[in-house]
Amino acid sequence: MKNLLTAILLTLFCTSAFATADNIYTRLNYPQPRLLDNDSRVWPAFVAYASDGNGNVSPMSNGGIKANPVHLVGYTSAIGTSSVDVWEGSPSSSAYTFPTTGIQMGVVSSSSSDASTSTGAFTVNIQYLNTLGATGSENIQMNGTSLVKSVATNIYRINSFSVASAGSSAVTVGDIIIESVSGSATKTYAKIVAGRNKARQAVYTVPLGQTLYVSGFNASAASSTPASNASSGTSQVVDLNSTDSNGSTIAGVFSTKASVKLNGNSVVKKFEVPLVFPAGSDVKASAISGTTNSAEVLFGLEGWLE
Figure 1: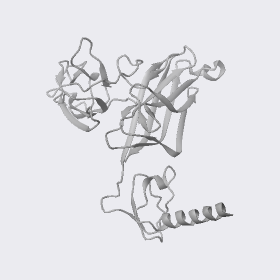
Figure 2: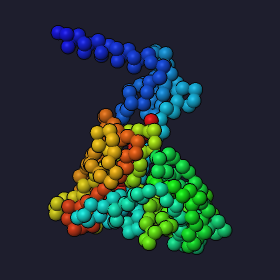
Figure 3: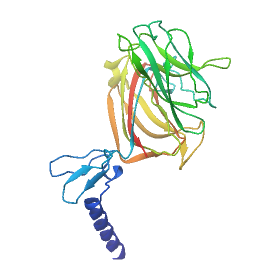
Figure 4: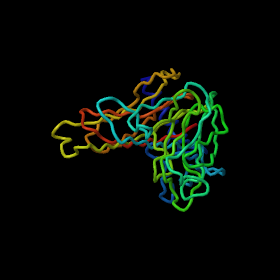
């Protein structure tokens, strides 16, 4: 009887708090928005609301944004019977290697047309973390096939790599990579393929002082033998992996947080309770095929930082 009374009181409290709160927060209405106002508008995630409790709802004065959305898109052109990470690195099927310390990086294109005086990419932007996990941003002017070094010398993670300005083509003419500039062997950390303006890599590290909440992801696969997918048992498994374990991180040790199995099709996975990744977590998508038949994989992740 006591437990029943407690449950009733909690239900009444939560219902009342949701109906009358001035700041109805993201996770209270995610992933399925629960707030319908008098104008039949359903309010989305990432927004804090002011409500009078009678269905009159508006964003807060600062635009209502109470969290920073995170959207990742990753692609790999070839997976096989060994797990690979979903990114467009060189080669496209290789595992992603994270830097072990903060370093200086450089950008270079496979085409001389990606330069400030030509038709391709003029400048590129990197969104990165330093060794402390603090965020940084830098624009680098392209010089075609000649390497241009970053000003930053403490780049520890690349969270985004994109074209910031371009010439008449409005896209990259060649493949543009960002790589290490020291050591006996250079390593690629992001790649924008020719004809695109952003690196497609399902690789991300949670910044210092932030928590990443993942609300869902989608995965698609196309086999080199699509007609035989069902009959031959050809399948692809896509995993969402992270280095966090029980609220802390273990560098280089990835565990699987969610998986989907594909048969040359697409799957959308939503989390009623979002996955939580603490600051410093390395997050990536990996894929493997059930047979030797090669397949390409596209992956998209949605979430937000708080």
